[in-house]
Picture 1 (cartoon, rainbow, N blue to C red):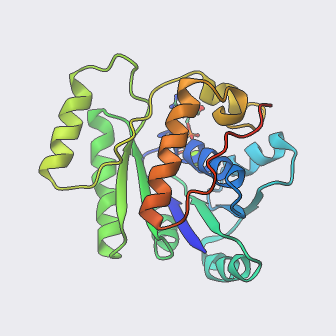
Picture 2: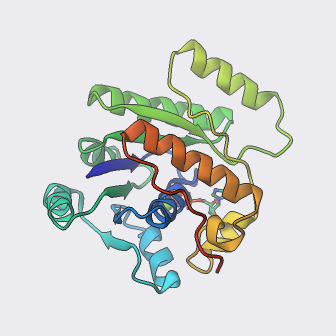
Length: 218
Ligand SMILES: Nc1ncnc2c1ncn2[C@@H]1O[C@H](COP(=O)(O)OP(=O)(O)OP(=O)(O)O)[C@@H](O)[C@H]1O
Ligand SMILES: [Mg+2]
């Protein structure tokens, strides 16, 4: 079993969005996938409730119980566990990162977000965990902020996910119904980004990407 941790100390940067989208992509590709929600807000759990299907196991788990939960999932044949973490909780993020094959750090290309991102990177580094920065909610016609962020990260030699995630209304629209953008609009731009992100994530954690079949339209 591989474990992907989505973490950022900054709130509202698409941690839960990335969690649910990657879970749907993996499930559609034939991987047994589970979401572990360590956020007291339980947003991934709310998404699963709205989804109303049993295709992805989503459980709210206290950080202290992560080791036993992950062991149980592995014994049950889970291929990929995705841990959604809360903002502003370094202890929980660290508890999750300890198990990570990859820590994905979503970040908006904006000055206020960079400080939190660097703190999250430091956490992953101090635990010796592989990580990648994922730029998200980029404006479709992006300005100089994006290039400035990319240049800064390159200077600091941080790994940047090559897939840029843009701001599309499809994301909140899909989430409202417990869906992914890949299910809501498989031919759309947001879905295409998520397929690329999934392929990148698979390469980085060392799993077969599977068939990469587009999920059935909702
Ligand atoms: N690429 C995107 N384009 C447009 N809206 C997005 C995108 N990604 C996320 N959103 C929206 O931004 C909001 C915050 O996303 P999300 O809940 O995934 O962030 P989070 O980091 O998990 O937040 P929190 O820190 O509160 O847990 C949601 O309403 C979501 O639908
Ligand atoms: Mg969240």
